[in-house]
Length: 238
Image (cartoon, rainbow, N blue to C red; front, side, top):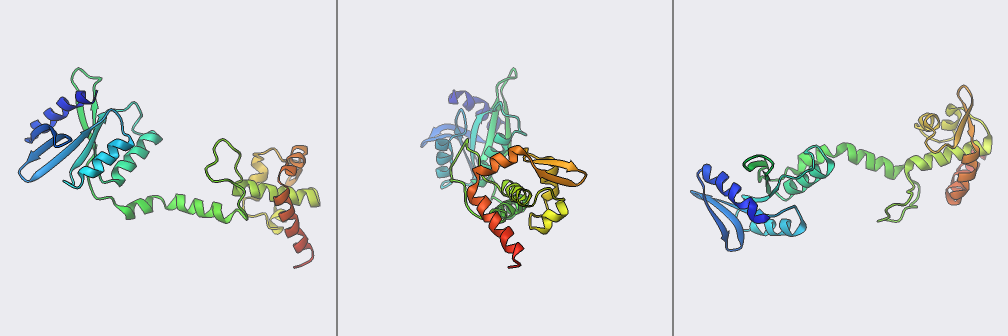
């Protein structure tokens, strides 16, 4: 129960010298000392209502915490890290209460603080680079935004289709020759890893299109037409 969180947090701030009150003008818990005012909103789990409530409290003070029972999620789990990022992004604090021990244990993994946008952007540089590469690696848009549980067309798959088109048109080729036809830097790794099962090595350094590749290439008529068009242009020297 949310009320179970109250007493441990009350005692925690009392021991730090704060004057603590419950249910003050709609705030679940307040802790005050000198000119400092802390507001804590109690909930069984982090949800949208809690975050909205906490953000509204920031009109009254910058020291706003949300308090929840310590979750089962590991601190290193993706979900927990994403929740913590959201809390920091909203410049809130986070209090967790563990009830597994003989007496409840209060911890503060996140203190309210201004969100460092520059630091956040620096942390996302690698993801940004990967995103740009993926965008640049697609020549058209074949995916419907919001799709889940469906096969997506990626830059990697487009490259595999391009390689398959070259092998279908010219027969067995070496990665060097394929790159000369414009298949890109990842040509060898795509052939070697053979993620889709489309390729076969006929001899050292020479690859051909497999029967599965021949069959599945028919599922992408627009891309096949596009890459055959590029090969025709190369063949005519355009």
